[in-house]
Image (cartoon, rainbow, N blue to C red; front, side, top):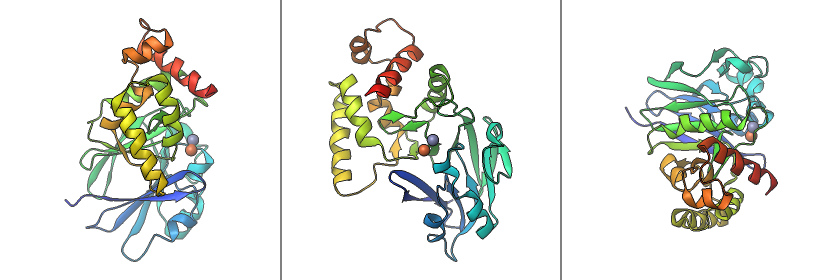
Amino acid sequence: MSPLKVEVIPARSDNYIFLVTCPSSGESVVVDPCSADAVSSKLNDQNQLVAIWNTHHHHDHVGGNRALKAQTACKIIGSKADRSRIPGIDIEVEGGVSFKFAGREVQVIDTPGHTNGAISFWLKEDELLFCGDTLFSLGCGRLFEGTAKEMWESLERIMKLPSSTKVYCAHEYTEANGAFAIKVEPNNGALIARLQEVKELRRYGKSSIPTTLKMELATNPFLRTDSMEIRKNLGLENSKNWEVFAAIRSLKDKF
Ligand code: ZN
Ligand code: FE
């Protein structure tokens, strides 16, 4: 089975839409189309859009749903919990459910926190994760609807995936996230190296996405609640992981 091709399509000021295509069958899916135009121009005779996968209901992730559906007759797959907030939803899914795309298994993981119905899509064989606004490179989504504990449990589900997983986050926030990350863990060598790498990429207008789970485990403060340096800096040496996470999240909100 030849690996899926993932095209990273920038949209708005910092959104990413992902066009995933199977080179053998020509089937494509688009993840979080904030606008239809950005996607339509990429579709051609070689790829047939079979589905839209929505990670959550925010407008910058579902804005292109209806227009793309009208143009292509693709099916819209989204969270059951958000059925009333996902425009044009056809197939309702939830954590633990899996479905097929181009002969592969796609597993849905519940990742509430940023929104209550947030989900992530994991393709084991191709080592791909589409996590919307749950995990960012060097950061995580704001808690608009869920609690810190829920978000931490969502991140824990992601942390259990193979570390070679390529993580497709829906925004280019890495550089700004890094400025905060280095404040909470200034002596993390892997983080210092990643900041340098991201700075170079961004200087040439390149995307810092995808990242890998291995990279995030080594550098993302929101996944590093075990770090003694972070715990000492926050005065939380003996707190639970989710409490350390909550403290980092509220510091970042004020940063
Ligand atoms: Zn969002
Ligand atoms: Fe977003």
